[in-house]
Amino acid sequence: MAISKALNKYDNTNDVHKVALKSEDGVFRMKIKYLLDEEEIPKKWYNVAADMPTPLDPPLHPGTLKLMSPADMEPIFPKALIKQEMSTDRWIDIPEEVRDIYRLWRPTPLYRAAALEKALKTPAKIYYKYEGVSPAGSHKPNTAVPQAYYNMKEGIERLATETGAGQWGSALALATTLFGLKCTVYMVRSSFDSKPYRKSAMRVWGAECFASPSDKTNFGRKILSEMPDTPGSLGIAISEAVEDAATHNDTNYALGSVLNHVLLHQTVEGLELKKQFDLADDYPDIMYGCCGGGSNFPGMVFPFIPDKMKDRKDLRLVACEPSACPSLTKGLYAYDFGDTAGMCPVIKMFTLGHDFIPPGIHAGGLRYHGDAPLLCNLVHDGLIEATALQQTEVFEAATLFARTEGIIPAPEASHAIKPAIDEALRCKKTGEAKTLFISLTGHGHFDLAAYDAYNDGKLVDYEYPADLVKQSLAKLPKV
Image (cartoon, rainbow, N blue to C red):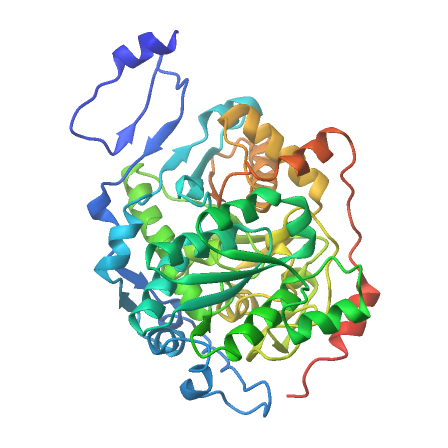
């Protein structure tokens, strides 16, 4: 049936919540969307710390290894974010100024992946929530905007940060320009070289971007003198950004993952998602999301944690990470530094060691040695599970997704697509009609060099570097 004919059949009523284009035989030929009105953007963030069965282990001071106080964080964070970091309140108000900017792209759509289901010939239902509709093309502005807002309110003039693949750096560049702040980004060298247009976007939004390790900081110069050809790591880039913030009175540090307040802000996604599943008259059996430090995945699944603890005990929440940097699946649950130089708080997490430098995989946003303490706590308690995947199988799944659903997914997000496809094919064999959910963190328009490498047969898989991890774990702080 021609699209124009289908459009004529579309019932454009006031109910904009369910949008679908059907053929006369009732088969969906185009995407099925579940939309929320902008007034349904959540007015509060959800704090999972209020509902965790095991209390979170507190952060420690990197110098003394004693309990960290709010005052210890004030040199690099605004007081409002420190309060959120330490909070166990279940609900925290979203400032109206932040919601006003959220309205540029939120609520984000929930899609039923009907074309992918058809290609797989599966009885399973597959949904995905698409965060690539944000101006920066990913989920990262969900926390970049409030972080820039709170810093602006406290008189900070510049933010310094790190970025892996560039999604976070470009999101913070966007947010700072909206609130009249300056921004400096230290971008992991392997991504700086392979993803040039992300740093171009940062410059358009007024930020400066340096390859990390750089010659702009003492720690960067130290690493370059020891390892001039290093691909860099998020741990190194974090150290540079923290040093920058700590040595300039007008500058604070902003982090795009790992810390409690970051995961808090990202729950705007999962809160919307619960409403959208209600609109779809459905509920997920399994939820998949990519995981590096842990921001998008917790943002999607944390609002479902109370359900899993009470009425939905069979709900599976699966964090999907790269086999080249498998912190959740092969890391040690222990206290470790959040950065390579040991300037960040010492936190309890699954870690591969703070000076471990992962191979230069194309999913640069997932190359972090540890994971968010809130997420790790729930993995340790068995409420969340994890799986690790090689990048060639991930790109194979991403290509199938692009050829059916039309969206070219970011390499990071594609880690959630692969296991969802595997489960859908398993359902095909068993006849189970499960409901599967994919957290689609963003688009891959700036990652096309990686897709070229895959299509040209040049993409390689990396073995888990057990010996290097063992060496790094031997250097954990003695807590």
